[in-house]
Amino acid sequence: MLVKEPDIFKIIDKMKEHYNNNIYNRYIRKALLTMKISQNTWDLLDSLSEKADYFKVQGYQFDELYDRIIAAATFIFHARKEVLPNLSILLASGGDTVFSKGPEGANTSKVLTQMAINNFPVNLKIFSDMVNELYLKTVDLDKKMHKGQRAVYERIPELKEMGHYLVTE
Image (tube, rainbow, N blue to C red; front, side, top):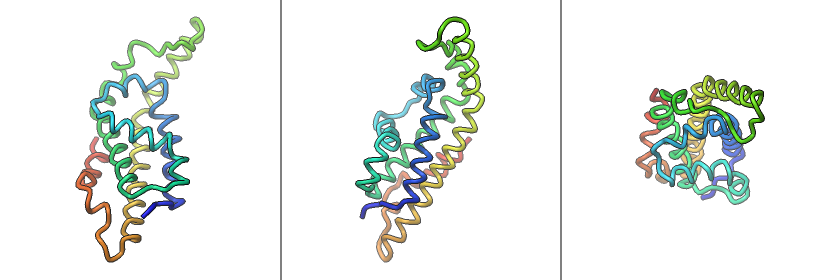
C-alpha cells in the first residue's frame, strides 16, 4: 500500500525546510560530517529532503517511510551524542568561507557561525519533534490501512528504539 497522505507530506516538507536551513547548513555542516553514521543513513536522510517531490507523486511504501524516519532518528541521536557537546570545538577553525570578502565578510561569517552554534540545540530539538510527529502519524495511518492485519511498523524491530533515539539527551 502506498502512502499518499497530505498530512504526512506536510510534515516532511516542514522537516526538509528546517533541516536544510537550521541543521545541515553551511555553518554547522562541517561538524555534522564528523558523525559516525553509515552512508546509507546519510542517503536516506538526503532522500527525505531532496526527493520529497518525487515521493509526493509516487507515494511511499510504509517500509520506505519508516527507513527514512529511522535514519532521521539515528542522525538526531548521533548529533546529540557526538556533535552537540563539542560543536564549538569542531567549528573552532573558523567560519571563514570562500564567500567571505575581507575582514568585514569574515566577521559576519563568524557571527553567523556563532549564532548557528548557539541555536543548534533548539533546532535539533525542533527537528526531533518533527520526526516524532511524522512517526506517530505514519504509525496511525499504518494501523488504519492494515486493519485486521499486522501493521508494517510491528515488523520493523528498529522502530522500538525511536523513543531512545529521539528523547535521549
